[in-house]
Length: 176
Image (cartoon, rainbow, N blue to C red; front, side, top):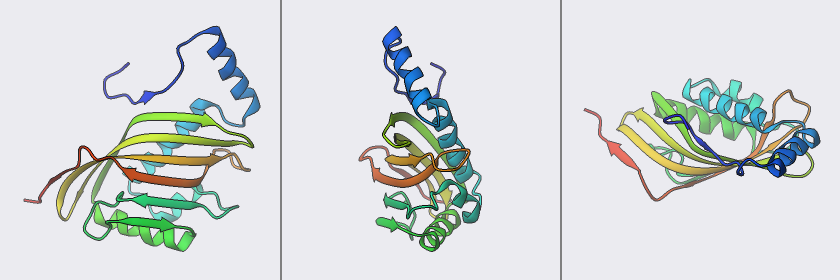
């Protein structure tokens, strides 16, 4: 594996795992690599600090998406649990998050993808967030679970995100 590349949980290669992957690709709209590509696109969008409206393309507008974040916003204004259930609350939260951090890096350490029924996918991520805001630099490790749907889009869309902090590796270095 390349240095600093995320761990992607796949079974040991055998003819059985190969057949299983081929079956998953045939029976689902998106392959494992297409789901991975989508995840990296979303994370890159956040790192580039794109505006909230551009992020809306990633959310499932056909249903009410749910984003439940436990301490993802590490900054002074964004502590605690955030429960987002509609576009206006998402835009308000996201703009606050982007305003809090001038620079952001999200590094996926592990990505596990489960193919569920009815064109849905569950993605379990272990991420490291690094950001520089008014209180200095912070590095924080956390887990997220995304539920993605196929829908009528060319890429998956996010139905829900649940985030929870990992008790390790939160580092804050005050601003100089």
